[in-house]
Image (cartoon, rainbow, N blue to C red):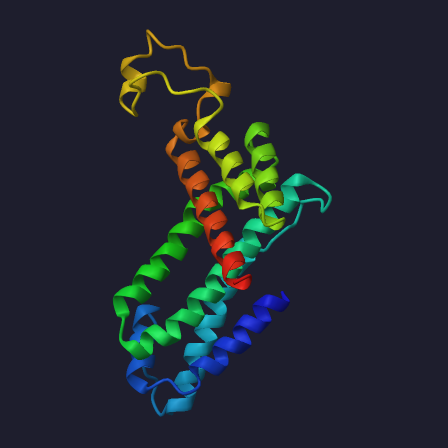
Length: 227
């Protein structure tokens, strides 16, 4: 909650001196009225700020809601790590956004925002499984070991574990591709414990990829802080 309040306060300060044209553009993007009768520039600015706060609060609620998770469990620690990295990613995006606005790089802004939205969207099913205590034990164990390795700054180990999570322990049969797996089903027995969960279904594949995105983000931040 402290991070949320700090983010809102920071955002409020950032929005104070935005030109009227930019305020109108942002209100339109939020599908909100751009002008009320007799409304001053400051009133319109405050309205934009309130819309940001309400929108941000709705987004924050799910990703920072640890209700039902016991603090000493792997489920809680993975959920908290993901939540923390998403918050850090959003904070970094907002910092970059100010400079990109000044430089007129709207495409970069949209690209960064789309990346964050996609990350949250695709990783949400993972968080739901964690909260419901329905995440596959094999995935849970590997993800837990990954976040521990990341927190220790051992990203080589984290990526090694991620590869086990993504492609399994067994070597790929000769010539097997995404299509080949189905074509060679009769000739190659591929057991559940040996095959990547990433191939099981689209939802799983996506949240595992988003988890990797957070690992990469965490590593980049770690390297920047230690250079």
